[in-house]
Image (cartoon, rainbow over the protein chains, first blue to last red):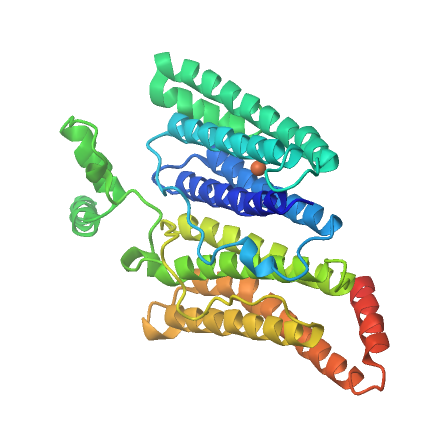
Length: 178
Length: 222
Ligand SMILES: [Fe+2]
């Protein structure tokens, strides 16, 4: 594997974990007694664990390709923090989640570009490019579509009914009905 | 009868201060603009959390997150083709998963008791390490130390709830006992056993076969 390609792929591990931390903070925010949106909280806690699984998938791929023999410690910085700890409402959190995912997708596309034509080698890493495209980009687009749909539904419910709309949407989210 | 009526009204007034019920009454009588402050007693804080923030649990959750990532990286190291120890990899991955779940559950408990999570509350009882490329025995020693640090901190937090502040919050104490103290005792004991077994096996003339067998045992037993 080309060095620049490996470095980019390694940095993706931290990108995924950072996303996990922000989702964790969202889960914590919506679990507060004065916020009380258990559906949102559950959704974001689950998203946090999914992001952690993505990081693990990348690590497993690196191991499969013979990497990480002496530098696992450098994969993650010591204290990884969420982007923020409070959100003004559900739409704002979902919108930030969508921005976050769009950013992750951009990162993956950058890795694909580089690993197909590394600037430091002639090695076109077909397999990694295929894996990232097939596994990760598919997940990303599905996730982005899901978030966009949720933002639309919630937005519509709130235009006429405001807080009631969010209350109802939250209960639907809790039962995976939306 | 009238006496009891008056008494109960007087009692209601006397005990009504800083309750959610009086907040709601005041809010509804004065037809105010929507204001959270008017409902400041309508929260889930009682017992220990009525007066104290759960700062220790916040930093404990953060410690669990950090240690979960450490175990994830330790596990990954044993998965590389040179080290190739699937048992060790599995053991540390299991710890990583468990610490991650513990962190989420701690956050949930903090909010259950009316608190908020603070991700900036850094744990002072645990120093992060930068070297996670450890050999088999050293990794077991490291894991044992980590689990003991977590267990000792859980004991300390438990004692602040039960003794130091004289709050005697049994609910909080029970949570720590059930979710942390019990599983931690098991983890510490298991790791102490592994460490001693492996150390004794290494005195063999050809330790590589011993480590291979021990790793295979770990893999099968988990
Ligand atoms: Fe992801």
